[in-house]
Length: 189
Image 1 (cartoon, rainbow, N blue to C red):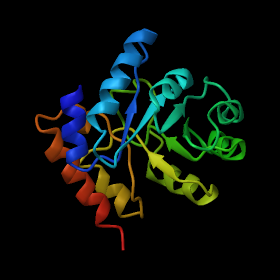
Image 2 (cartoon, helix red, strand yellow):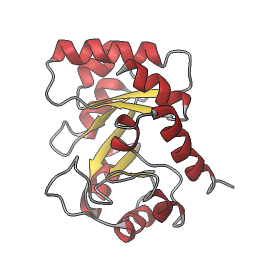
Image 3 (tube, one colour):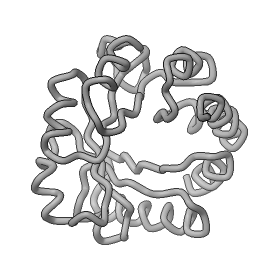
């Protein structure tokens, strides 16, 4: 995992989010420390999914909360303003709630069909654009984003995206990350 993270960051990944749902606490802690070391001499930041305790213990840059996680206000009291707090959302109501509670950004998914969220109906680009217009915090799309689907987002002004399979399952994570980053940067003026 550390090699994939190093390669992805070398290719342009800005944020590494540790998302381990089936690993025990000590395992997540150990992996988080290794990832933090892997990105130590880079500008990349690390977020930990749901585990505020582990994020604090390893000095992560932030925490990402699911819909069933702790409330944003509670996490903010725990971590202060030194950590970024993001929230996974799947519709406008959840997005507005996350913004009202003080999230720094929201992740909106799944935009496209993805094996990572089986059974979830893709929300589509129009829903992403609508939510982006109705909240004032950054909205990061996730779900089925790859070199083929990303242009559907960038042509609508999207300048950031979250990816998993497009980089993690690539034979060349650095090149895949670099190609995705290049597409995103074409929109930045």
